[in-house]
Image 1 (cartoon, rainbow, N blue to C red):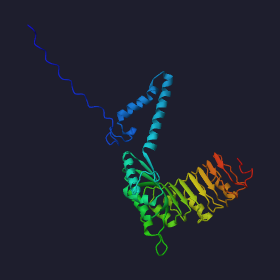
Image 2: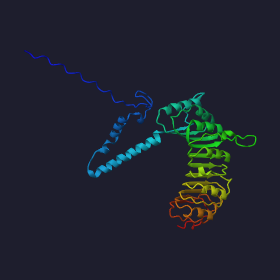
Image 3: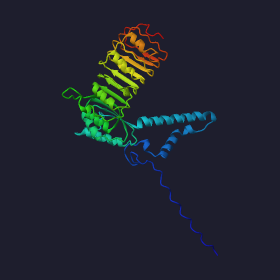
Image 4: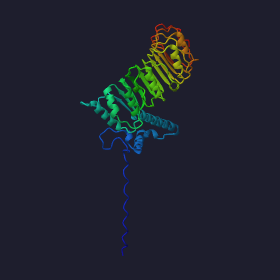
Length: 359
């Protein structure tokens, strides 16, 4: 008698779903025709691609070579990380790029810009160069950035205080370069629009053709300022809250300050590491900055040998490494004697003698 028929094998369990290629929140879908980013892939897929790219470096071929191979892998990882941080997470916009067309091309361009930005949900930095005032006003209304995106704006036209106020309210501005359009009231004073800024996270500020009132308005709302550049402006003073935080100061065409007042202002910035002075009416300034490493005093036609010798003295500025005294045509034989000095530029100083460098 034949035995009973064995029970049928249980059905195989269902296959697990395929590994997703695109992570949640990715800028594009797998079927999208838009250009995609390596960062849109899920972490396991990215790891597999990276392994295939550097797999040959992981082959162990002896104890004497393994450290070398690992060093190469570490270098590759650091390079990829830096590239992601500096390129993939930064968006640069120049308003001459021509994204828009037609009668409403300015608005169309900003809307197209928003579409491109949406492809970068992890965007950290937005850098913007604007030459058109009309396009800037549309940008103020329409531009959409991911939360906490740190912004840099450079304007090649005059902007009003109200526009700057809107800019600081809408965006996390960290770097700003502008030339103000000063509106005066009947008494000749700057209107309130330049005095109503919200507190900002500005770290780098460049002001061109600016009054002392407007400069002080920016100082009042910029507690994190680290770098200040003033061009053809009328600075009179600087609060200690600002001067003690500055690591870089650039003064170009500042003719309103006498030597004594300018020396006092510079000396108050005790944490400066770089100082640039150009086209200023200085003849004998003096300062002692223990952290200063780079000093540039150029196109100062009245600068004296005694002044140059004093500011280049290791007693006054002990960490000085780079010096530029180019285009200071009144110099004849200053003493450049500093043990930490690495580079000294004294170009286009026609009266210099061969005794200029003593060490």
